[in-house]
Image 1: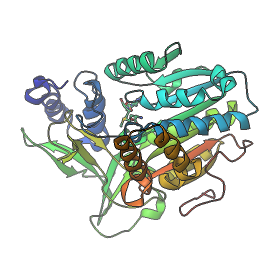
Image 2: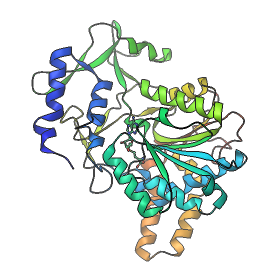
Image 3: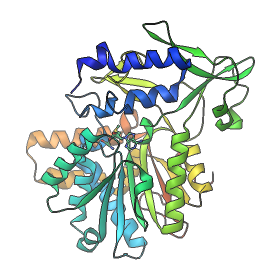
Image 4: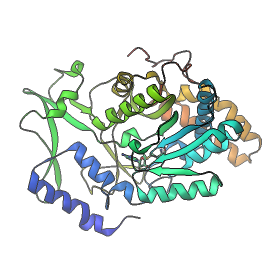
Length: 379
Ligand SMILES: C[S@@+](CC[C@H](N)C(=O)[O-])C[C@H]1O[C@@H](n2cnc3c(N)ncnc32)[C@H](O)[C@@H]1O
C-alpha cells in the first residue's frame, strides 16, 4: 500500500536533500532510488500488478505464458541430459504467478519436477511475501529459497527465467551535444525535479556503443551497467556450470537511439520526475548489448525473437484450444483475448522479445530453431 509519507516527505525530500548536498544525480541513481529505496521504493510498497494496480505483465494476462515457459525449461532439461538436480531460478518474480504456472505445467514431467531446486531472486520483502503466499497456495509442498541478489545462488547447473526484470534495472541517459555525449542528470529547483546536463564527460559514456556516435543534436542514448552485469553473470554461470536462461522483456533487438524512460501509474503514463516511488519506472532493454555481454562471458545466445513468434512456436494456439475445451463461453472469450494480447504484433507480440542464453554445447532451445524476422545469433 502507498503511504502518505512517500508523497509529502520521505523519498522526494531525501532526494532533494541528496541533490543539495552532492549535486545533480544520474538517471540510474534516480531509478534505483525510485524503485528500490529500502523504505519508499516503488517495489518495496507492495503489489503493483493487475487491473487494480499500475500495470499487467504477461504471466498475469494468462496462465498460458508460464505454462509454455515451463515447457521450454523441460525441453532444456532434456537437452542437458536430464540431470538429477538443476537450479530453477527466477529473477524478479513479481507475484510468483509465472513460477506457479511453470510448476503446474512441470507436473507433466515428474522426473523434471523432482530434479528442480527452486530459487527466487527478489529485492522487495513485500513482494517476497506475495510470492511465498502464491507458491504456498498454488504449489503446495514445493520448497523454494529466496535471495536478495543473484550472487547468492548456490553453484550448479541452472535454468533461469526473467520476465520484465531487465526493464526495471537502472540505466544512464546521454544527450548528443556539440561537445559529444553529455550525461543527463536530475536536479531540483527546491521543489520539483528537472533534467539538466553534466557540464563535462562522465565515465559511463565509455559504455555507449561506438556505432551510436555523431547522431543529430539532442539525440538520446541509454546504457544500463546493471543489465551488462546481470547478463555477464548469467552467461558466465551457464557457460561454466551448464544450463540456459530465458529473458523476456520489451525493447529493441539492435542498439539504437531514443529516450525510453517511462513511468506508469494505474495503467497510465505518469511524468517520470513526479512523485518518485509512487509510479513504476522502466526503460527499453537493449537486447544487442545484453546478448553481447553474455557471449563475452562464454555463453551462446539465441534470438532475440519476437514474443509472438516465440509463443506460437511453443504451441500457444494448441494450449488455448485445450483450455477452451473445459471452459465456459465467457472463459473462451478471455482465453482468446489473452492469446491475442500476448502474440499480436500491435499488442505484446512484437515489442516484447525472447532471448536465450545457453551453454555453448546445448542444443538450440525450444522456439529458437528456424530463425525468425528479428533473430540475430551472429552478434
Ligand atoms: C516488472 S516486475 C516483473 C514481475 C514478474 N516477473 C512478472 O512478469 O509479473 C519486476 C520484478 O523485479 C524485481 N526486481 C527489480 N529489481 C530487482 C533486483 N535488482 N534484484 C531482484 N529483483 C528485482 C521487482 O521487485 C519485481 O518483482
